[in-house]
Amino acid sequence: MVKKRVPDWLNSSLWSSPQSPPKFDAVKPAAPPIIEPPSPVHPPEPPSTYSFRAKKAEIRDPLSSNYHGSNSSVCHSDEEIESSSVNSTASAGGGSARAVAPPAAEIMSRKAQLVQELSRKFINMGELRRLASQGIPDGAGIRATVWKLLLGYLPSDRSLWPSELAKKRSQYKQFREELLMNPSEITRRLEKSSLENNEVDGIKGFLSRSEITHGEHPLSLGKSSIWNQFFQESEIMEQIDRDVKRTHPDIHFFSGDSAFAKSNQEDLRSILIVFAKLNPGIRYVQGMNEIIAPLFYVLKNDPNEENAASAEADTFFCFVELLSGFRDNFVQQLDNSVVGIRATITRLSRLLKEHDEELWRHLEMTTKVNPQFYAFRWITLLLTQDFEFPDILLIWDTLLSDHDGPQETLLRICCAMLIIVRKRLLAGDFTSNLKLLQHYPSTNISHLLYVADKLRIHLPA
Image 1 (cartoon, rainbow, N blue to C red):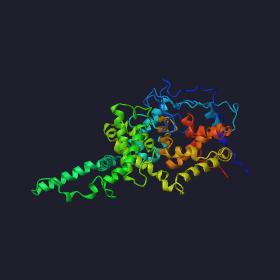
Image 2 (image 1 turned 120 degrees about the vertical axis):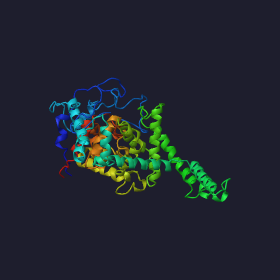
Image 3 (image 1 turned 135 degrees about the vertical axis):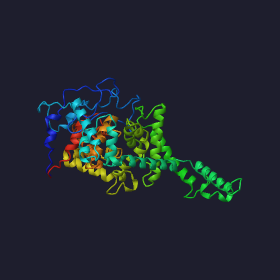
Image 4 (image 1 turned 180 degrees about the horizontal axis):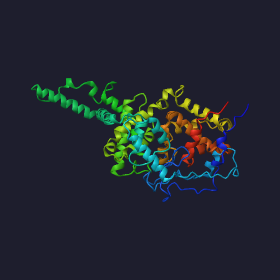
């Protein structure tokens, strides 16, 4: 069997690592502020975690100048960048792998281009996707507006924005009022309404027993009983409560004792409960809180006060739009179907085999590392547990802006994650490789996205 060769672009000395770049402590103070993407074709910033990985105790702002995680503009691990230069040697050219943060002028230029594009009466979505894929600079609510457009929440016609936003926000308010009400409050309102009707008819006094329906009784087991439904949903709501409370405990926006953090947690909880009740086929799947967190963070930090105040409603609809592309991964009944999560993981395996058969063979045939052991979390949680929070935002800039759609882009990024640590994987056994992939090392996000973009190119058979 003829072995497919590794593409020449991965052998470039451009990706050979510099001599022992300094390692950074995930919570070390003071380093240059993280501005946004460094670039081959895509962006950077810093990683998050969740139940599978230990969280750091320090609470901080993910986009502040004092936040330090993987620091996208610096290669923290020479092994990560070195491993991406497949079969290359240290003497293969001397090009440095250190990705330099884009000059301030470049960032300002991209920011100006995005602002200009967003000011047009009709947004050119192709141009917007091109600009966003390079990383969206912070400030002026640019990312919040761009993500709403990329997710289809806002139309490309600016004149329709006010009416569309008003309609959606009003609709969410109605969902909230109807779905988040305690059954006792519903019963109380029904009784009050009935008493008022009786008084209108000139009859004052207690509600007659005949008017208390079976479905309104707390002990009713009927399927239509609001109390029975409430008790069945209580387990889901308890799970949501637990997950929301442990969402990014290292970031003060989501965690801590401040009224601000608690308010944000309550908004996340409401969004997830409303979603679960409106989507009985999916309901709530553990980890959805991690997916919703970047959306809510970005929309809540919109400098436009009206938009920030409506972040809960806007996040709900953006979450629905985002999940529409990944819905089948969350439906357990579809797990073994051609559209379920196992089929998606198989596509990742095929993608790796197509681009790097040697690595694929070593992982799956030699060391027997089943891709489900690591890729299940990568795919279902959209990489939100494997990178620092600012890095997640930059990865999502690419995910949401890619014309191939977020699912295909996500698979390419996952494949690139394997390729850029290939040297360590090829040298490892089952235990070391599984540990590496379940606790993915700090890496240069700009480089990762560059490699992922290169995987669009299909190799000849």
